Image (cartoon, rainbow, N blue to C red):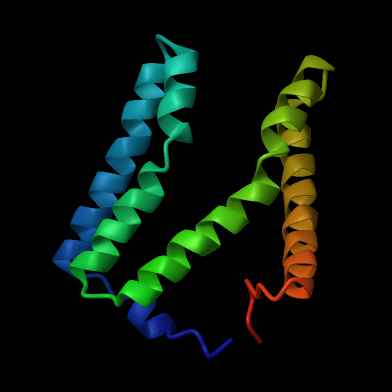
Length: 131
């Protein structure tokens, strides 16, 4: 990977602040819905709202079709190793794991599955983490 341009990443424009507000608003609304209907909030959060909003921002910034396609494809592959967490985490909570212990364990499991996904996909010519 090339050097990450932290100076560009950490400099915020008024448009960036709008993006932050909209993204945060989505999370807050879903959290508020959860207070009344946990299944509806799960459905809302399962929708790829963040990815869709990110792709809209990328299109607005005149990113190439290739970059948008790479983003969408990468998102697909990066979601896969996170899916087991949504079964393991509730299982742990129902078996009396504390919230923070279950959350930490699932973070570790997800990181391991992420790297296994990267390694396996490289063998099939899909490089999610170019050198």
